[in-house]
Length: 123
Image (cartoon, rainbow, N blue to C red; front, side, top):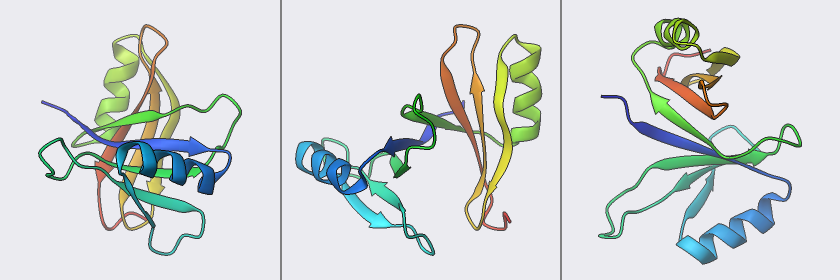
């Protein structure tokens, strides 16, 4: 069964958002290796074990909202299934170098969600 493996949090002011979320939830922020404006977010469950990881970068479009990414074996296959089942692919398979691939889709109800395929060799 596919699970949410990552969330992406867009922000207009990265420092303000870091302060807000670290103060509110205790989330930890660390610059992603090789990036100057994208942070990896470490969360924890109520018992203190690691939670779902996230990322935070500058908002790319005025209507960009938090997106949950669901881990899949193959983005190519899943994109085809999204379309076959009546959804839409909003952003096709895109490499995140050294991490994997992402895509952004819309379900039949207009909700946005992401797909994530882990691949350290992504370029």
